[in-house]
Length: 233
Image (cartoon, rainbow, N blue to C red):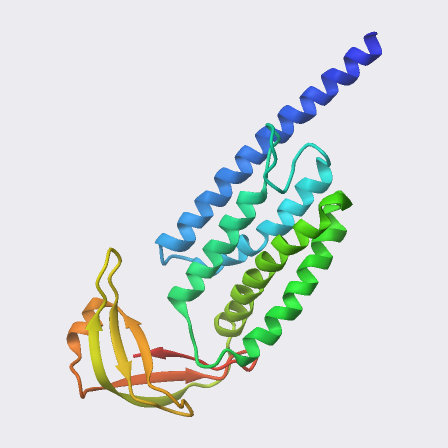
């Protein structure tokens, strides 16, 4: 009886420890999410930390097997599923604010490879039950793809060492979208090898300084992974 009581007490301590660990982990990830999306200070470091979050989740799932869960289940078990979603959302938001890709053809190829690799690593390290593998495969396919998308673009642009090329593009239209979250849009005439006119979201100050018929300067880079990207100047 005493031995059984000791085992139950150990299980209670493990559950309490796991719950406190996940709570602290979630607070840290949400704080980094705020840092990544609402500031412009040391965002490269914040992105790298956020990219490591899935592997931290895998470690917790392995260390607290059966206590910490990945999918939302009925019950009161600590769950790291939402943490993974927050991590990838922060990564996607950051790259959408910082980088503009010229063509996504190569990005999709890299993303498929990252998705497959992510699923293999997740299943190997996390060591989760096999009975929910199909559902987890679907979830991780979406998660892995967007994780790969943000990581590919980040590596390609943030660590770019290619020389810049300069182009000019004519503004053929400009407008502000209506709605709760309005955007300032420039419609640029075809430039470089583009076959269609391009819509660009710009900040209000830049939008207000240009008129239809003016030209914008474009700084174009080949990118670390050979994926062209550019910035309006």
